Amino acid sequence: MEQPINQFDSAPKNNSVLLSVIITLTLTAIIVGGGIYWWANQKQTELNNELVKTKFELAILNFWQVRQVFQDPQNKNKFYYVTNFDDGSDIWVYDLAKDKTYRQDGTFNFNIPEGNTLLLSQKLAKYQEFRGGGILSNKFVFVETSSDNSPGPCFSPWLYSNLEYIDLWVSKPVRKPFTLPADLKRTEEQKATDCQNTL
Image (cartoon, rainbow, N blue to C red; front, side, top):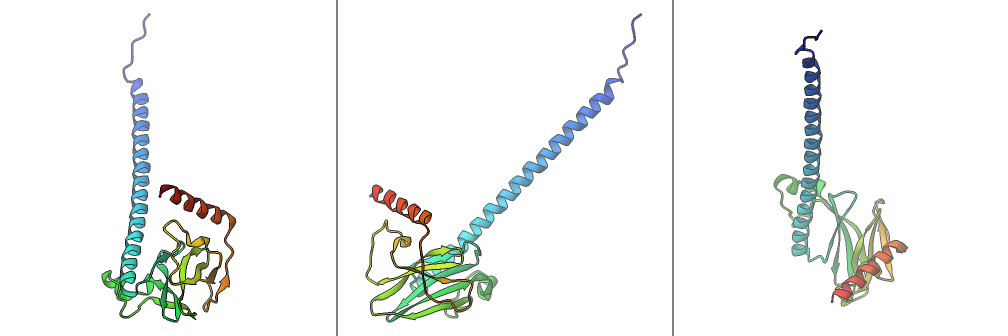
């Protein structure tokens, strides 16, 4: 004898499969959407940091004729730079968080050096100056060199033989000799070689 087919027996199975598919699609959408949102926020933060750095560089290069600005990789609100004058050089830090004018209207006002702190001021021999090299951990690395020293477009400031640094974690830093790590030296030498090959 033939058994009658019960159409309703498969309904609970179909409902549970359908529910599983809906839950899977919803979770996938949330995870993918969250990932996209996180990525977009990261990119927006990077762009904002780059915009602030560019605005600061343009303002300070124009106002104080600074050669180069170095953004602290650990604190994106801090920028280090060197100013040179006839008989000496200064190393400064600018802290965006301390600049009320910038926080209020997004402009830099260098007539009143809000947010700027002098870290080191040094009298130097005539025609000598500091040039920034970069930031490595808690060290601002620089060199004292002749003001007419022009080593060329492919030269890395990390390759000067007489590098010095100041410790950024002390309140009154002093000049100290800097030893370039071997891996950084190799990297900078390779960059210089690659650059020379393109000339």
